[in-house]
Length: 420
Ligand SMILES: Cc1ncc(COP(=O)(O)O)c(C=O)c1O
Image: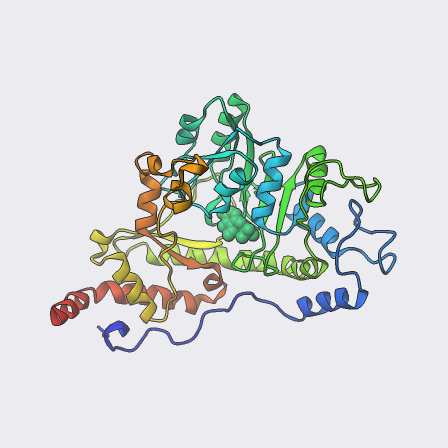
């Protein structure tokens, strides 16, 4: 067996994996069209083609993008905005969430899923995840409901659909709005339906790490015309489509997306189907090839999760079975040229912010209530989606490196003895 690269051996791989973002002359062409048009911001609400545009008849890139993206996700309306975080705040506010309300969220997610409620005066309440999927546990969601619960935010973590059947049924019984956090789920489906088109609304992110990106950006999807209008108004400082420019109807933000971002996202959207297919094929291949290595397993893909978008390829790592600590495993793989990540260092509620009594979240109490999330943080390994854009030989390098680290696990003991 070759010596591990960590201890001076030859690495499995020196070649980089595909870079992200991926782009070609389409991004350049569409962005240049915006530069030359002089139409750099989308200053008219509503219509895709604005009669008073700088170049009359020139369609707004943002307007075109939001319609196309919503269509891809199977939603009637798409409202583009500045970020996924902004999308969460706007959608929650549009759903009527506000001061004194509670919003149930999972603890294994990005910070914004829980800070969006706080920023509009509501309180996030954490409920544990299922270890098989890392998504919200419907049973724990139901237990977390109180008379103050107004909304629930299931996250389709890594692009794997949450258990929407169960979540929708519970939410309906209790009169709770369902907002899908689909920040990882571009092109993803649940029972054949686009993620983000199932609950009252969904939110997406186009931040730099996401499967489609303009550096930053977000979008709200919904099938509800009234809700779409309110979201759009909230993003436009409270204005309304077709109404006088200086008439502001509600307290809103400026969360508009620029036309430059709209242009880039149109190009990115054109590439999404091919990239999604490639990510899926490579993820399936990796899953089957890693299956026999003890201590490593990929998450379950329940039947309802018909289309995974693989924002991340998530592995469970069980140290005892594998024979190394997770940190040793990560170090070993990184030295072999595989850029693996450990994921969230701890559950979201353990962030200092949520321990501050002034916020009223009482993060401390959730350590006992959410053992699965705590375990997921200790036992997870993430691969970024860009790795899945490689070819089969690239996937084989990952398999070879994992196999090599497993086979040579005793080298870690030997190295520790030498330095002891
Ligand atoms: C699950 C989840 N929700 C929401 C967001 C917020 O998106 P943004 O970074 O565009 O504000 C992210 C982004 O990282 C995310 O991962």
